Structure formats: C-alpha cells, structure tokens
Length: 577
Image (cartoon, rainbow, N blue to C red; front, side):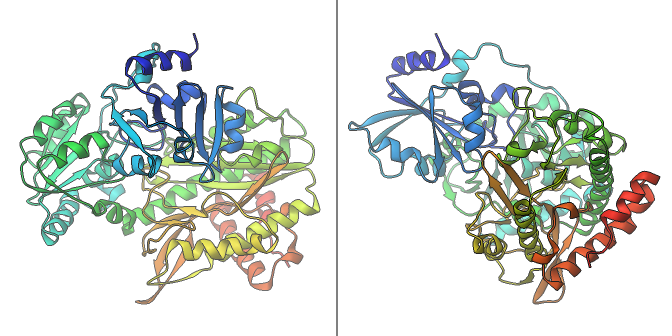
C-alpha cells in the first residue's frame, strides 16, 4: 500500500475528510531536518516552502512560482501541482459541496497561516495532537545531539545583556508583561549562542519566555546546554526542558503576552489565550537583529572576501577546464566546495548550492541530482547560486557564467538583468523608502521588454544565522523601511523554461549618508561575466558603475590569485569602454 493510501486509512479512523501537511517543522524554519521533512516524505518535493492537501480521492501540492518547474520533476503522480497565488487551498476546498472536517497538526501551523488556507470556507478544523505522517514514517534518520556553544564577542560585537536591556525597555514602554519568542534565530541572536539544529543555519531550537523585568526562561533540549553555557549565564537565563513549556504557561494568569505571530503555533497560541491577553505586534527582536552593528558589518566584509576568493578562483577554473575535463553540475558544485574549504574559516554552505546548466538554470531553486545532472559543455549559460557560513557572517552570491558562445538574445537578457541589478545597487534611499519601492525600480528594465520574474528582488540576510531573514526585503509586498545596517540580497533574474536562466546576485548593506539619505554598499567581491554583456545596451552611468565595481574587486582579490588566475582577473576586471 502506498503512503497516500496509508494516510487516508488513518484519516478515516480520525473521521477527517482531509489533512494538511506543511513543509515546516514545529520551529517554522526554512531548512527542515531530514527526519522532520514530512512534505518530502509524502510527496517527494524538496523545495524550501510548500503545502500538501490530502483529500479522500485527490491530493494537491501548493508551491509558488519559484518551484513549479522543480515540483514537476520531483513530485509523484498522486499529486496535482498548484501554483500559488493562482490556485490556493481555499479555491479547492470551496468546490467541495459538503462541510468537510480538515485535520492538521496544531504545532505546525500558526493561526494566521490557517486563516489564509481556509479563507471564508465552511470548514470544521480538527487539530490532531499527533502527526499522522509520523504514524506511517517508520525509518527516520537520527536526531542530532550536537551541543550549543557560545558565540564570541569579537564576532557579534554586542553583549547579550545590552540586547536584553533593549527588549525590557520595549516591553515596559508598551506595558507588556511577557515576550514569548518562538523564532529560533531570534533566540540565537539575543543570547549570542549558536548550535546545529537546522540544516545550513547554526540555530538553537526552543522557546524563550522573557518578562519585562529581564527574567529569561529558555525552554529547550537541556542535554544540548553545556556546563560552560550554564555557568556563563548564571541566574540570568534559566534552562528548562521544552516539554515543560505548557505546564509553565498554565502558571501565568491575566498577563499581557507578546507572541511571535510568524512562529507561534496554533497549539501554543490557543493555550496562551485561555487565561492571558495576546498582544498582536511584531517581535521586536526581528528589527534589532536586522540592523547590524559595526562589528557585524566589518566581519561580513571579511566573510565576503573569503567567499569572493573561492568563487572567483572556481569561475576561472571552470572556464579553463570545461573543454578539457568532463564537468557536470554536481562536479562543479563539488569543485566550488573544495575551493571554499581551502580557507580554514569556512564552516559549511548557508543553503544547498544551485548549480544549473542550460534548461536546469531556468528552475529558480534547482537542486542537481544524479537524475537531472547535466554536463557543462557546448554553448549555453551556467547559473551558480551559492552561500557560505563563517563566524564572520553569512554569504549568498549568484553568478551567471558563459560557457562557449552565448546567443545575442542571451546577451540582451543578461545585460537587462544587470541593468536591473545596477538600478538597485545605485538606489538613493530616503527615510521612508520601503522594500517594494526598490523592487519596482528593479523590474522596470525587464518589464519594458515584456518579461518579469516570479521571486522577490531581494531578501534580508542574517549574521551567521539564516541566509533568508526579515523583516526587510525587496518584493512587491514588502512594506518595511530599509534602515542603515540592514543587509539584503540584490538578485533580479530571468528564466526561460527548457532553455536557460539568468540571475545576478550580490549582497548589499545600507549605509547612512546623512540624516535624510542612505545608500547601498556592495559586500560581494566576484566579477560579473563580461562574455555575457552587450555593452551597447548599457548607458554611460551603468558602464561606469561596472568599471568601478570591477576595479575595486581587482585590487582586493589580486594578492590571492596565482599567475594564471591573475591574468584572468586582469581581463575580467578590465574596463568596458
């Protein structure tokens, strides 16, 4: 009996007509450990976001535009693939003539996410306190038992007591008794601790209950808390096993509790509501964490130097060797990893590298497998999106690399995407500039040609934390202001199905110019591929921008190149006239 039928049998026992399966685990992070990736188990889909709806006779997988092509290649035939927002779960549910009972794991959904899924439909929501997928998933990989560790001040630049003081001040100002922080990256940032509880991110799973008088209780796996950590925090932070959280909550009565709406589950929110008042404003840690201090910015520049050296060396090697040796998407990815590992400060990738040649590059969040692995040869475009974790920060870079001769059309599109990239990098920010304002500017060059891309122009980036972190971002829907100290990606793109993909991504940070204006400064130190550029499509300011960027890179990377690489660097960074 296949997995879907096993699940439907359990659904019948639970008297449910349907069941929801999200990508996330109970910590709502982007990168889910293998042993909690229930969506992958049931459907085969490996993307970072998605939702399955299992009915008694049909199954649906909902993904956004980044993943529609990927889902078609990965997902088993039991599922109909739906691209959101064109088709949402409530569109399917409203076409069912009877009132249905919809089962879900209350620890894996927030109240807001459930409202968005069911919309106005007449549905009987049935929380089931054990996960139905876990009932049929017998051979899970082991849980990791790696300990948490203290993050040194030379890397983070701000004592945790200062951070606690800011939160306490905020709560008193708003007359709030408690902050319940369920966002694990916020917890890691607040306490200056790190761990390995997520793939690609050094997170410390758990929940923090923080009262306005600075008392902090960290509900977590206490086996991961070392004696050194306990001694360091003393009585400032009390560590309690996570399973005790609900019992502890029951002791709190008639209090105002600020919860993190993005990551506080339906299960916990309902328990808090029973005897307390829930305050519905954003966890203040998000914004504090997003504005990097001077130490974090300076260290991030160091991380990007390490990354720039490795990636530039790899690009030169690949251009020299794709004709001499059999180079594939996977071998290229492994070769890049080898270059990164040559630097002793490198820890691990900040996400799964996207190594897509030709038509695979058109799949926005493609992940090469032995089934899809293409040889890099002939005349086409190679899209490489990679990131790294260092104690000095988190990186994320995409370069589109010419293999052989690229067509005039490809040069036209690459040059247009580069113009969009330059428009973002050159944007003069004001105090009231929102993410959506910059996104609009970025899309203009492509829209003029009748093209667009289905992802945001940029996302916020954490500091030795998640590669994708808000609240800042560059998308049509982002209404957050861009403040000095924020780090974002700048990554417009173009994707032609079954043909090629182009994306150009640098990380940038916002630097104050004066009281009314700020500007973006590039962090990424990797040349653009001039073999992809049609200079006739660029204006004088755009050419000057590229030449200035390349000149800076040349002098920074020059000392780290061997003789062959230095010749290539000289050519790659020579001025476009």
